[in-house]
Length: 416
Ligand SMILES: Cc1cc2nc3c(=O)[nH]c(=O)nc-3n(C[C@H](O)[C@H](O)[C@H](O)COP(=O)(O)OP(=O)(O)OC[C@H]3O[C@@H](n4cnc5c(N)ncnc54)[C@H](O)[C@@H]3O)c2cc1C
Ligand SMILES: NC(=O)C1=CN([C@@H]2O[C@H](COP(=O)(O)OP(=O)(O)OC[C@H]3O[C@@H](n4cnc5c(N)ncnc54)[C@H](OP(=O)(O)O)[C@@H]3O)[C@@H](O)[C@H]2O)C=CC1
Ligand SMILES: O=C(O)C(=O)Cc1c[nH]c2ccccc12
Image 1 (cartoon, rainbow, N blue to C red):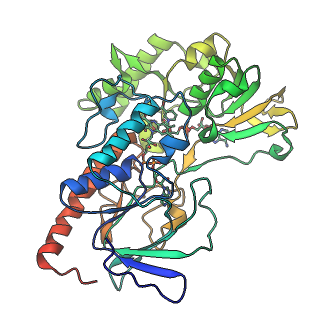
Image 2 (image 1 turned 135 degrees about the vertical axis):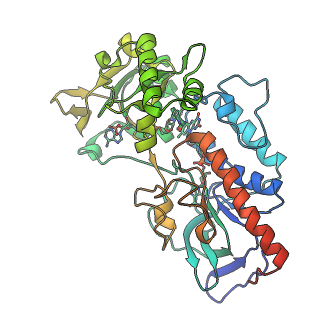
Image 3 (image 1 turned 90 degrees about the vertical axis):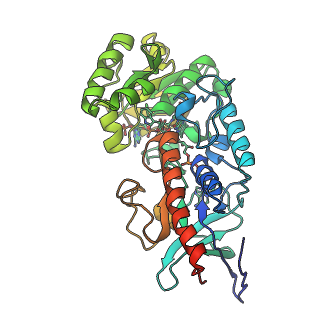
């Protein structure tokens, strides 16, 4: 809904918007736009990819299912269809997101990578520049020289996700390794690894599940564990572990709930330390809250580890031409290496002149208290609380924006 388009002699074009600008058309961005729409506030979504939910569509493996039950993963104002299983598949989730976008008539501008956004104090506007032709396969780490289109708006909603870019550690010898090297976001299926020895670095949910997939396709996975991990059964007491934890947290402090979860985990899956999976000192929920490290909800890896079909190995010291050396000095041959080493945001790269985000890409203060729309900026989906947290942020941000929107519309003082 551009109010005025003012092409300049240079390659900069400016569109001044009356409505909020949302960066990212993943679940968070869609949820804010839908929540705003229900409050009669229009918005515009800028998305770098060529469709919605790029992470789910292009950067996840085939066998992925939601690991929390449906009620914890649905977006605001539109429940999952009743016929879906408790843990919908990736395709179910993508179908749901497309239906969600249709239902709320959300039409993001695709192929728009926001490469710079800053607050213009004089005009009280957020100026966001986007390059029109970049794709998600290009990491947002280098400035680009392209035609720049600028949007200016009193509101900027940052919804680019905690998983915007892969983290690939620099490991000595990686250049010399002759097999394939990939990040978990590029891994699709074990079908091409049959009979191969695959080193999976990292033992989070991605690493564990990729190992299960490799096993199921007749490959030999080795999972490198650096510091340790909390593995919890996906279900306990006949229901989801996450659901149990959420209910207990209403009455009990996190540490007590953690103690309960660990006792139950020990009863159900046994002592994981025996299999090379040391438990961190801090409990699983406290660790998630304090560091963002998500516990593994077991979808079959543990029994394969116990059966010796997934082998746990030590931290990698270096890669060699045909394998890896580990910190204990052992050396092994591998055909492929999968880095299941996690993700980072790209916000610090493009959001300028603000101290709201740390260099590691986290909002400095938890939403809504810290990033509560000061100067009209909102962060949605950055509290490490998955889709449930993103939905809560979206509802809150939409409410706050709509209050200001209504007062500005009434007073007609939005002079741009
Ligand atoms: C493999 C995996 C499985 C997960 N499973 C679950 C689960 O079962 N339950 C759960 O609650 N949570 C889960 N999560 C965590 C989280 O809920 C999801 O990552 C969810 O997709 C987050 O939504 P989002 O919209 O915040 O981010 P994203 O889904 O990452 O969407 C962000 C969007 O912003 C776009 N973008 C990024 N940078 C720019 C830019 N500069 N300009 C324009 N567009 C940009 C991206 O292309 C993307 O489309 C999972 C995460 C991963 C990685
Ligand atoms: N729905 C689902 O089933 C799934 C959900 N997810 C979610 O996606 C998010 C990302 O998960 P995931 O991709 O597993 O990433 P995580 O960040 O959860 O895990 C990364 C793993 O890589 C290890 N690692 C990181 N850097 C290095 C390094 N330099 N050397 C050695 N090891 C390293 C970490 O070890 P260390 O602890 O030592 O740092 C950790 O084991 C999580 O929130 C997760 O819950 C992911 C997959 C499936
Ligand atoms: O899967 C994810 O990435 C999530 O963030 C979901 C999630 C939020 N809080 C949790 C606590 C335990 C396990 C998963 C989650």
